[in-house]
Amino acid sequence: MRIDILTVVPDLLKSPFEASILKRSIEKGLVEVYTHNLRDYTTTKYKQVDDYQYGGGAGMVMMIEPIDKCISKLKSERDYDEIIYMTPDGETLNQSIANEFSLKENMIILCGHYKGVDQRVRDHFITREISIGDYVLSGGEMGALVFCDAIIRLIPGVLGNETSALTDSFQDNLLAPPIYTRPAKYKGWKVPEVLTSGNFGKIETWREEKALAHTKNRRPDLLEGEI
Ligand code: ADE
Image (cartoon, rainbow, N blue to C red; front, side, top):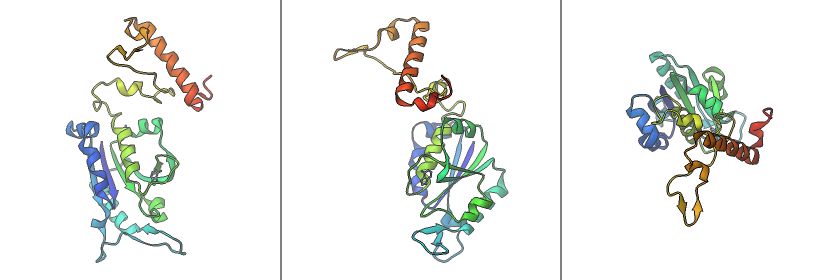
């Protein structure tokens, strides 16, 4: 998978790709991530990327020209499956969207800043608009990082244990059951006996029951239409 991220603050996107799972996915050659500074695509003396809104109103708007130049250059070099715009009024990211995007080959992600981008960018270049939740961030960069993390960890070979993404919360509309590790007893607090019983049938049943109870308690909306 190749991801090209367009931004006016490339520094925000650096370190998350230099640690842990994202770093490993790049080192293994499973993912390539490139950031592009939209200021490098300006033609004005002061490298202007934003301007006042037509019609008046507070806040600056990202101009179409640098975005067009950057996207057009990338598109002349390869085909892209999707050109995504990170915005609070996009489709809300969930596990099923993450699963869908984890299968793509090449993607461009445009991060909004200031008030957002000129509407003509959205009308003529963008194929999907993604929000990471009902709150407003100062820019799309953090959203892009969340989105990249959610999809990259699903690419086969990225996680050490292939099955571990399959047992995540949300993967089957259930939250994950409680998990424990050594020691079996700490300050008198014990790990549930069934988990140390060695009876894998019983363990599976216990986990299913706990996952269901946890989901009913915390996120009953996930079970709507299922029971
Ligand atoms: N940019 C600003 N807020 C955002 C959000 N909630 N999701 C994605 N991009 C954003």
